[in-house]
Structure formats: C-alpha cells, structure tokens
Amino acid sequence: MKTVNKIRLIYLPAIVLPILVMIVSIAALGVGYMRINDADISSGSFERFINPLNTMNNQTREIYKEVEKNILVNSEIFEDQEYLEELNSRLKKKDSYLIVRKNQKIVYQGKAQVEPELIEKLPQYGNKDSDQDRGFFVSRPGNYLVKQQDFRYTDGGRGSVFLMTDLGTVLPHYRNIFTQLFFAVVGVLILTSTYLSWFMYKEFIGPIRQLKAGAERIKDGNLDNDVVINSGGEEIRDLCTSFNEMRAELKDSIDARIIYEKQNRDLISNISHDLKTPITAIKGYVEGIMDGVADTPEKIDRYIKTIYNKANDMDVLINELSLYSKIDSNTIPYNFDRININAYFKDCVDEIGADLEQRGMLFSYRNYCSSDVMVTADPEQLKRVINNIINNACKYNNKAKGKVSITLTEFDRKVQVEIKDNGIGISKEDLPHIFRRTYRADMSRNSAGGSGLGLSICKKIIEEHGGEIWAESKLRAGTTIFFTLNKVLDQSKEKKHE
Image 1 (cartoon, rainbow, N blue to C red):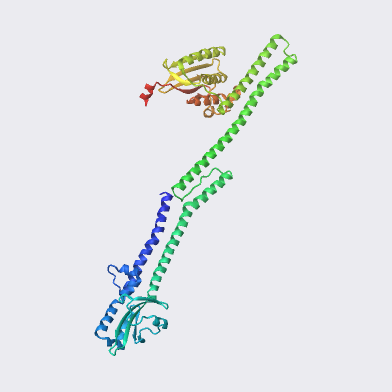
Image 2 (cartoon, rainbow, N blue to C red):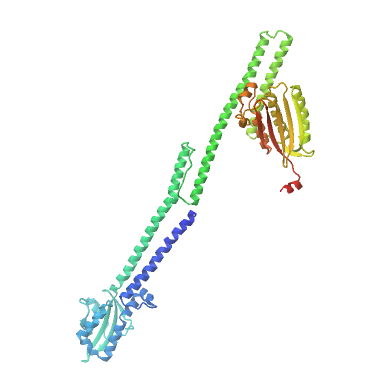
C-alpha cells in the first residue's frame, strides 16, 4: 500500500475517533445520570439530558403536583412536621429540598443551612411572574430552580411552599462528563500522535537516514554497496531503487572513465612505440647517407625509398589517430545514402584485387545478393572499413600464398559482408577483445606494427550505420570478419513484413 494511503487511514481515525468518543461518552454518562435520577429514559430523554434545567424541572414535577393537590384539599398538612420531613426526604433524592413560609417567616427548611440572601430573594406571596410549574431561576448565592405554591392556613395566615432544586448538584455531573470527554479526546490524540510519530520514523526518518548513510559512502568513494531498506512505503522503496540505480550507473561511469583513461595511456604508449620504430629507422638510413655508407647511386636510392616508406607508415599512424579522435568525439560527418551493394562492391573488388595482386596474394569474390539490393551507408566510411580489414589480413599473414576472400549474403532486412583470410589467426583468449581500442595480441605485435585502432574504428563506423560486426578465428588457420548493413526495403515489402 502506498504511504499516502496509509497516512490517510491513520488520520481518518485520528479525526473520527475523538468525535466518536465524545458521542459515546455523552450518551453513556447521560443515560447513567438519568437512571440515577430516575429520569424517563424512553424517547425524548436525550433532549432532557442536554437541557439540564428542563430535566431538573421534570424531576420534581410529581411532588409539585402533590403539593398543589394538598393545598386544595388539606392545607393544614403543611403544619405537620412528619409530613414535611417525609416530603423533604423525597425531594433530597431529586437534589432538592423544601422551604415553608408563613406570614414572611420560615417555619420549615429542609436544608440545615440556608443562606439568608437566598431567603430574601424568594418572591412575596402571590407571585404570578412565571409559570410556577416550570419554576423560576435564582442565582447568587448558588443556582436554584425554585417552584412556588401559595396558600392560606386555616387561621387565615399566608403561606408559601418552595421546592428548591439546587442546580449546583447537577452541574458537577456535567462537568464530570466534559472532564472525562476531555481526557478521552486527549488520550486518543496522544495515542494517535505517538503512533504517527512511530509511523513517520518507520516510514520516512529511518529510510532517509539509511539513504543519507548511502550518500555519505558514495561521497567517500565507496560505490560497491546498495542501500537496503526493509521498511517504508512504496514511494520510499522506489526512491531507494532509483538511488541504487544511480549508484550503479555512477560506478559504471567511473569504471568506464578509468578504463577510458587506461586505454588513452595505452594508446599513447602504443603510438609512441610504433612511431619510435620508423623514426629510428629513418635516422639510421639518413646517418648512413650522411656518413657515406651509401656510396653508390643504387644504395642511396634504396635508402631513400626505405625512408619514404617509413615516413608513410608514420603518416598512416597519425591519420588513424586523428580519425579515431574524430570518431570517438562524434565529430566525423557521415553522408548516408542509398547505394546499390552490387555496383559498390564491384568497384571495390577491382581496386582491392589489383592491390592484393601487387602484394602477391590471392583474392576471390562471391556475391549472393540480388542485383537490385540497396543499402543505407556512407560510401567513404564503408570503404575505410573494408580497407582496414583487408590491410589487417595482409599485415598478419605469414603464408607463402596469402588468401583473401569477400562474400556477400542477402537476408530479409540486412546484407552480410564476410572478409576471410588464411593468416596467423587469433587465439580464443584474444578474440573477444580485438575490437577494443588499442588492443593488440602479442602475436600480432611481434609480427607487424600498428596502432591497434583499425578494428576499433571499423566497429564504431559499422555501429553508426546501425549494423553489427564480429569475428571468427582459429590460430594459424586464419580469421573471418563479419559485418552487416541495413537494406532499403520497399514500402510494400515493409508492410508485408509487419
């Protein structure tokens, strides 16, 4: 489950639970309070609970009706102390007490201590300012719901019966409700915040610390270890995966840079070595001419030709290095065009055959392509590839009768070019590396010079053409280089293929 959804599930009870606790607390405490006070817990009781004044009024209603009835039937009963005590004991159960007044004098009070201020606030005889069944409210001192019933004694004296309901006894019940409700809500919030803190640490803080530790390791140069996070949501795990992928790519980039720098050093070393050999030869032959060692015109001519050939070798090395630098930095321009593979190779074969004949090597050519086969290629760069492979075939051939063959084969979407020789071959250990920059097997180094860039240049050019290049070889039996070129397909044929 996503972390966002988890947080929503946590915050939902954090909001709903306090409200639920509030409702349950009010209902439970209210019902309990009404039961304690013998209130009617049938329909409408909740309304009585939330209206305490009405509730207290209802509690003494039956007693008030009894007082009202006795006044009409037998008012002398209010001079009977036993009746008054019994009536007062019933009122006590309703958080109330009785006061009886005769001719402005209190003749009975159901509470041991009644404040004089309260007595003074009791209305005079014949109060009609309010509905006596509902009573009126008196405050300071205390808070009282007062019900008054006036009558005349048998001796003609004026009497009043007061049902005093002390609201101060009911308010603590309500304060208790809100106190319990407050602590319940606070408890829920504390539990929720504690769980949220733990959840945030587990889902965010812990994984972020692990990611920070991983970043510190990368800063210190340690790129070998992934960050492993066992907690956290889907987003954190995705972040960790991206972090580890970044670390792996950074490591690959640094490893590639290290290899690139090593290859550059090897390249400089190889070029220096290969330039040193012809330069040493040139110096030797020039010194021979200067010292008079070449004392005949024929000898001088041979020395000069040798110097010329060595200078050409140096020029080839420098050109290869310059070309590879352009290819490596992607600054060499390609002029791709549609070319007929048959016509193109016919011209190449004529030139290659004449060159190989001068070198004393046998050459053969086979073409298994249709006459109208077209490929997409840069003619100049493709010729460079073919010449590099042919030159290697000649350079690394120690046979009395060297052989080179070119074979073209047509496939559905590609044309495969196969260039085969019968030279010294390449060992199994060296074969996977021959297209690597500056790589030269020991046998090839001993047999002939070279920068080691030829096949690397071929690989880059063929890959820029969207093709593939690979080799097969057997030591002392010869080497075959394969590469492919993309055919230009007719739209109708292309749709058929799709």
